[in-house]
Image (cartoon, rainbow, N blue to C red; front, side):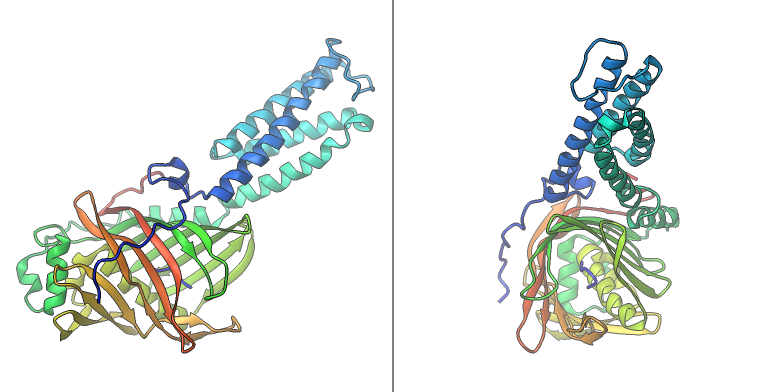
Length: 407
């Protein structure tokens, strides 16, 4: 798996933990920084909502708050109560990350501001919190509403999942013409006698950086790959300096795009073109090796033996043929994937340069009946010295789905 942008078995230290594998926060793609910010925001909004009760109590003469000196008619008292309830419920939905909180928040905002206007001289400073709530609702529209990259990703997945094939099984005959290291890898992975993979859903967590000196960004991610018409849909939630960053990679119809947005709204990257498509073709091949090894028997891949531990695969999608060298140990574990056909972002950020890229696997695991990677890294190999830009853990893996879990 990758993000666009003597081999003994070594266990890589676990990346900084953004939540346990069982945590619903992880399933929702949330990081510690985002969770903390969410609860702080929810607490501020909840307090703002509770303060509206003062207007309700004053209107009925049950309490005389010193903060409110203007008279509030009983009819407006009910407006203050409605605003209090709507704002507090909105805060609760924010705290629990409920879908649609931003829509209720906009309604609560209208009620709150109307109540504030009824006692403007004393309550006008509540408009500051309402301005904060408005910004939060606008962010929510793009982060979890129908207008953001996350929603675009989910729609794309939903459109493709019904298009599945009845999977045929991998047989020993399928392995006959493959180099010995690839045969060993496939047998050890347990694909022989099992159905071929036609789609994959993977959930990841880890950390990533742009250069060897950049700070690390923690992330969680989900991706779906489809084999019939090579497609890769990858959505990442990252956090840098406490601010959320959304990343959405698409490889579909033999073309690739990449979008990056700060706060789910502000565009940072909007890339496409033949260079990105070629780079993402390498990523597709890497995904097959790490997530769907049964597909390495496909005719779109031509194999060449190098030695007892290495083999070169040439993978073709459309006009692009790329190659990579797979390293496999005696037991059959995939140790590394190295390609010279990957393209890295140039130093000025305005183009791409061809650069060696590798994804060493540090630990393997069995998820259900599937043997797959567990921890791994992504490395760039520039002339000034190789460095790891990615540390990653595979949290969950499912194959041949007909619907997307949780969507």
